[in-house]
Length: 399
Image (cartoon, rainbow, N blue to C red; front, side):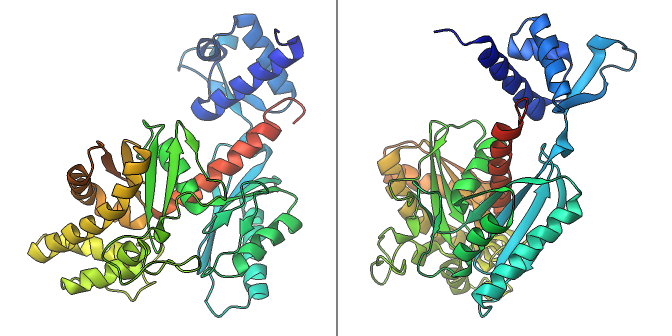
């Protein structure tokens, strides 16, 4: 059954808006080429979108061209603002951007381990509200939050998990209560996978597994361009994976004895110390830009370039390959991205070492790549989540 004229117009308008957001500004001729629509249809949709306040003329193409065909149309990016949060065990990072994803304001709030839940939540909400005001007068439309832990696939709510601060769940609920914006929460590793897929190391891959290596570890599964979260939202909780080389096995409430015990930041720092490599900061130290102590240790080993550094990186690759081999043997993703601060610090060198070991352990050919976005991948992914939500709500006449 063919679409009604109004449905067809809505579909065409949304397609044009997505193209303008991703590739704009564009002329009407360029929109005609990209959409495959006729010239009159494009002219009508451009007029509708202008009347709805969604697009405007932002310039002309070519230094010497004039007239309607030369007009460049762009998204009205300040129609609304978006916010992204990266919620970690000891901090909250906030970015506010326009509808094109251009950062307008940002802030980071450290939260000590002894901070009372109510105080932590209040300070975090105040930081979000202050950052939004700094960005300008446009309303905050959508907020994407990346947090560790399980996201209930039915309700979309963050579930409390042993070992994580109680203020995480309370913060999400308070933001949903206090803000007029749409508030979305997603597992931090899943958001990192979205970011690496759209703008990072996996842009040419619709199927891959991302292994997050930061203060903690996790995995995200992207199959045929879609995240796979699992029946309980726990797909990728690889820290609980039983592996050889640990002192025991994990439990349902504690990942000690699992893969986390081999490649969590503390374990990597201890491994580095065994080879005489000092990270330069106590565990949990390092600036947000530098990342956890494990990332500092990996950088130090690469800088040293000596036998001890090479031996440490080889031992780390051995550990990483143990967990990665289990994932590869079950999912056969063809590509593994070593992401997070540690993955980025190790770069192509560590990726090549892990790939070599996987090739010896598994008959399934797997390319291993270093993530390109580092710790910033979570914020980037959260901003994509907020932008996607805003597209569906705003990017249609009357939205």
